[in-house]
Length: 122
Length: 129
Image (cartoon, rainbow over all chains, first blue to last red; front, side, top):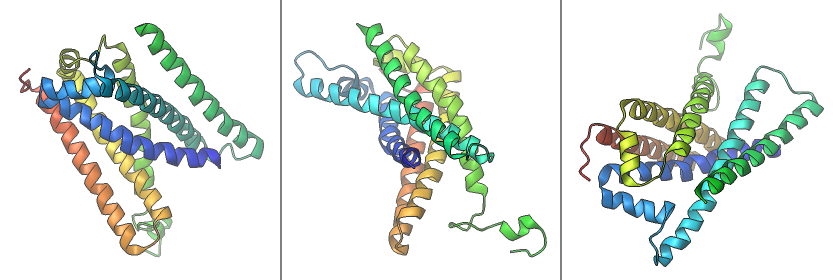
């Protein structure tokens, strides 16, 4: 139940937040170096002394972690749906175990990925 | 609707009257996304930085541009089907449902076209730094 709701919620987050960010990034890169720098300073790394940029950088990291987790959760519950589509895994205990494992897997892999990013850049 | 074979009886059914085809496309694009988005994330992680020169240089490779265009079409097709199912499940008034589905289609077509055009523009070298 929870995993099914999460599948829809994360799908929506990816569809709109992910889709818009992705498109903005590409359009900025195709427009000009100046347009791309606006994206870069707001999302990736603000210039020193740019207070607004510092704040949006932190927000972008939060959105980034959120979208990473959403993607992984959606991926794992999607794989679970593939298995359920074959007609397997409907026994209550098995069903519950795999549902819980999708959440454990997505959270662990998100932490691992962002941990790796953090240590690689510091 | 046919009355003879099993497939003839179910073709064109479902809440959107499109039968099982969107369901099947949802699964196919899901499998495609699994490969393409994993490639995209891994490539982004391996880039030395995300500044203009690095990103545009990466995007101008024919391999990268092609894979990214395929990914863009696959992603927007997948999310269009997925969000449409949600609209059909939760938006019950006929008019609102119609409006929501039209808006969704505009979003998907618009964003996908913008993204693909941008990739092509970069890949064809039309960007002046």
